[in-house]
Image (tube, rainbow, N blue to C red; front, side, top):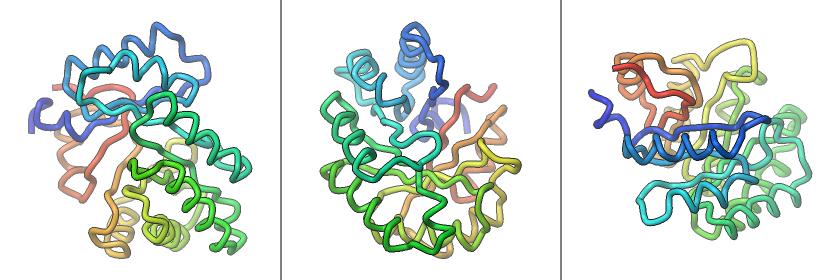
Length: 213
């Protein structure tokens, strides 16, 4: 698999708190040049990214509730609505992991359904920080995302102490079958490593730097 073959599976991601306009311009320019699936940016940068990628097939995805996922449900829904008004074509919402650990599945499901409704048939991805919860909770979160009619779950180990394990990926895939796409938010240094992830059941990669050739 070369970079051109991998490109449609890549979402180039830039969510640092100090991200500048120039960095968003470079992000979008590189995404256009490499014909990636699209970019993931903070909601405050959606309008700029949408402008830079207009008249292309690349998708602008807004990160909602990033990075903690603990904001009020109404705030998450409103952030999604504003992002869409500003040109977002996809939404990536951070799960409320605390509610999940409380056993409040109904609250998690209601919130995810609200965001899916706000997205108005645009794809919604639910970001699960697997390092904060057990594999069992991860599977439960993926099942709730499927029930809420999200299109993807994004498995992330970026903000915790461990990367997403192959066993976790396999467990989620077995639990939800083909009802959800699987995305991995990670660091991939080589094309060979990316190919291994794709072979392991990942359909989409959220990365901040393109793998080396």
